[in-house]
Image 1 (tube, rainbow, N blue to C red):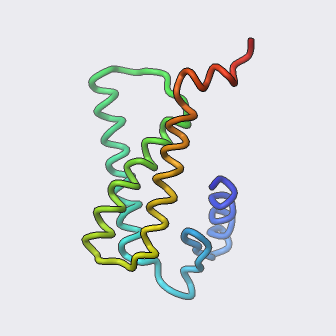
Image 2: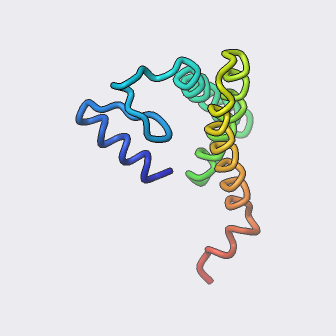
Length: 120
């Protein structure tokens, strides 16, 4: 995912829009359900962290936690919007991919697992 993000970002500087997995937006416009899912997910992720900050104050958090929360919200929001828009069944593979990534990040960010990577 990181390599795709770097590739899509560099391509954007050259005026080439690429959306997941590797489709050029110049050939076809970015589908409504995809950009709407990303947009609403950003808003809800911001709201989630704002509420957490208001309730618990400032806390240290690993960057992987932000990514995990965003991908989990993207999975939920994407599923709802995809169902509302009645998209092709193959489009749900994108939502499934992000859901699996969110689950892997959740498992990797657990304290018991992080101890394996800390210095002793």
